[in-house]
Length: 305
Image 1 (cartoon, rainbow, N blue to C red):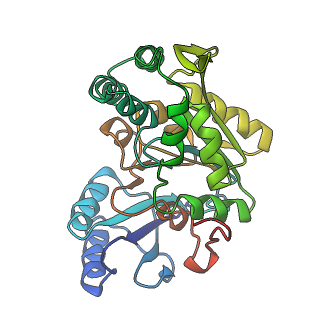
Image 2 (cartoon, helix red, strand yellow):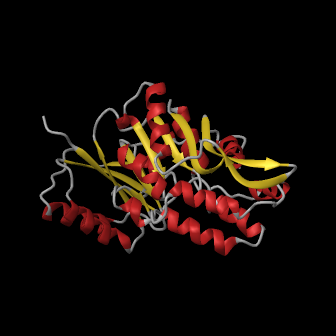
């Protein structure tokens, strides 16, 4: 028996209309993709599962993306099997779980935004060695007061759907891990806010209440997130097929490419090269629909706003 696949459509601003679904039907027919079961609404006019007979090729993905672009609808393709709902979440922090890059916000506080942001952007595009670029950015902060970081941390905004993503996956038995090329000073706080089980980042060194400009060893490189993912796969006694990895930049690429479900969240092109599953328009709850959760199964944080 051959594998079947699921095409999931997730609307953002406007509902999924009959005319739009008619356009999807045309593209399915043009690419000889047969539906294998009745369609399932995961959320009325918001999220829809369409089971298809074979994996879509690149030309189909291009056609469906062009159709959905103007109505700001995200789409995902997953294998229709018992592992669709993942047991391990590996989530990037900066520009994924939180809005913006925390190191850039630190730099802005000290009047160094342009210098640091330029290095960050090149690193996220994969143009610079991640470890080297991180050391260069932190060095610019030498001598700055540690106290200023607390204000930045408390003013960091979560991206829409972040808490619901974690709470829902936790409720259904997944281990949730926040992982960042940034700093544990921020990951510890954000992990608590979102109810992650674990968090990882780099340790910024301080002395006499000031940032030294150095990082404590070991310093994460561009492969660190994949290494952590593989360690948690062993700890959780799951396979990589049971992992959801989500992120936006070059240092997320390896784990996104290796996970059973790798999702780019408003990603840089270097991430788009390794996955068709991308959240371009919606919020982080789109990754729950991609796993087949219905809106009624979402879990919202009771004590958090």
